[in-house]
Image 1: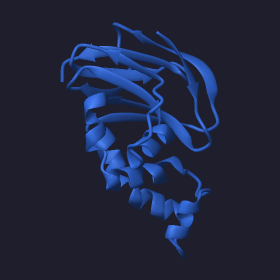
Image 2: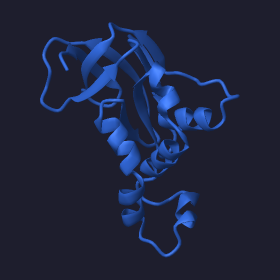
Image 3: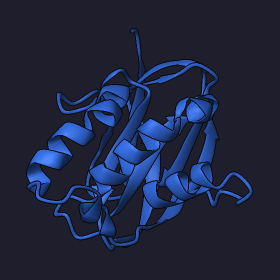
Image 4: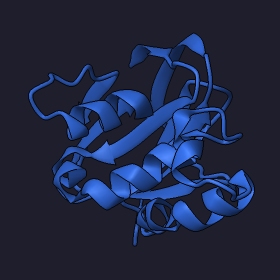
Length: 156
């Protein structure tokens, strides 16, 4: 399946099971916003006066990193990227793949900025990159260059 990836500055590609959106509470979303600001270029730096951004970012992103490490969401940070992309099923899994659990089987791809904005403001309609129905379960997911997503179903 082909798609267009259009990321703003301080953005990224998010892959998540659609049923997990409700798990992204206020604290996780705040942690996620800080994750996107790699170099302390946003207004978020004013919330932490007198602290080095590297220290703030390391501390404040623990929640979202733990959420992702548990296989709940994958985030690839991309800043100012627009490209054509595709997602393909593969049989062989490279060593550098990430695990994503899809309890409902509905794989959602969305930009990080869009996800955060729409979850902070639920009255907004989320612009998805794509939504894909897969068999519920565990998947190894990786990229072969920006926007080229690969997946393979695996045993947990």
